[in-house]
Length: 140
Image (cartoon, rainbow, N blue to C red):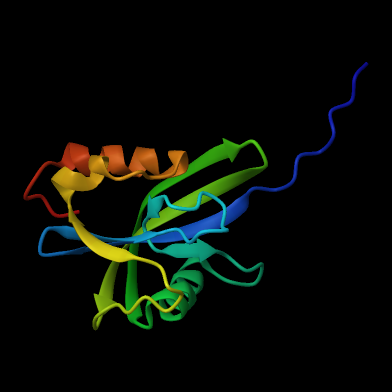
């Protein structure tokens, strides 16, 4: 009988899907980070004691110096990278004020029709497909 070692628990990551006037806010991952150079919806890893909403409020404040109202969950998905497994939870959010990139990351507003022109991590592709299926002019 072959024993399989226990796999570590997935890393829980929350992401804010912020849509304004038909454009989505995305950020580019910094050099030296996992998946550097990929575009993503802003957010980050949940601390063990945080709720997903608390995590998003903290991450948006740290990364974009802005407040956010966290709405409903749009999608929950998992993805296994060679070195880790992530559980991604995407939430509909409303940004309060204008975002300012606090970590030196690039940010941009991108139309629904241009989402597939950006290099997103594999774990985000299911959300991009879902947003594309909604069609141009449709709000979340």
